Image 1: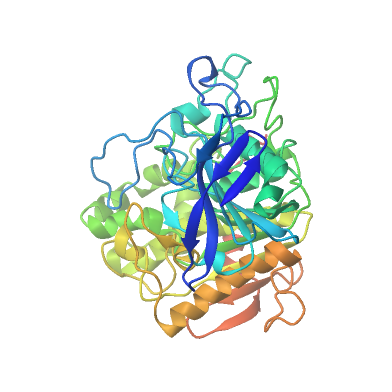
Image 2: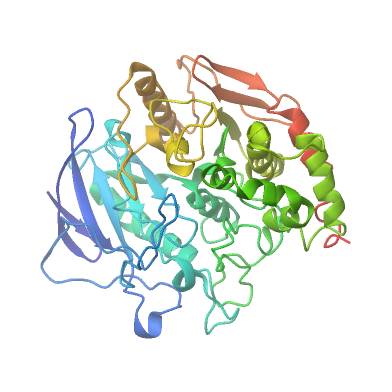
Length: 478
């Protein structure tokens, strides 16, 4: 399995998919110079040539990080600063017809994760695509900035752009079509996908993303997906090569195809901690009007954050004490604030083709068992959708789907991904279901549940309307 690239020759190995298909796999491919020494905190530079044949058998190092573990425990730092590598999987090395390329931008709250070792693509590769999984710098090394040319910031995003440049220059040698590239990601990876839709560096790509807690407030912290993730993307207009020279709040994203989805219990990422420590819920309840503005980041943007918090309490809890009997309402509050309302607002802003799905399927395995320690609600937890895309192996292995119902969802999710990458639409003519675009009037969305796969209209309209009428930005909007 030999492939030539612009920097030299690679030798790869065989990878077997869930259906027994043999594909070529190449790991630890450098797409940029190691960001060490003078290149630390700087824009990535193209990789240099290597002599002879480079063995691409083993995964490269993950970028420096403290891995995410649920429930949170004391963990140690892992990884290496020399980490700008990617993996390529291809069923098409010797074919003349190039296949569509899918680029997976991994998540991890901006400070953990990897494009190579966190999950196995044995389900995705049952379809005819070429898959690319790059690493990028994380945390301080990926985002620290002085907002000048000395330390411009947004290194992580520019690493991703460098990987896209490498793909343009090399992917045809792996049987992939450089003119047919789709980005997709979950959680923080979806945030990055959305950023690429705004950046002049990377606007001509299709985007497939499941949105995770982005531009809830549309201020400088807008893409900060976790309070721990202190370092996040910035508007780097003063940089020599800016990735994001303007505030996305005042701009339009590229009019490319965008598929966006919501897990019905996405808010469990916040509420699950109260299941593990129920004694903390009465404490949060007592300090609700003080805590909520900080939790939802409107403490500095709303002119009257206390009044907003009181409105939220009245809407979700009817001014009742927040107990475990109202845990679904508590979870819905986080789901709506972090995900539902931002998704709808972003759909309204996007001028290109766009589709919305609502994932409400609860299968044999769910991430809520990891987040909360047990199943507490019916529906799809945050991170449940990837169970049907990847064989998740890190930080906790989740057994692959085996029931007929789970396998149907697995086939559905991977078929939708393949259709987007291949045909530019999620349901081309001849598909068993026609998934229309979302528009302001109809607001069509694809409902994926345990007993129903159907097209519905206006996702949770009362909850969307509630957040739309709150004065969350009046202090900064004048």
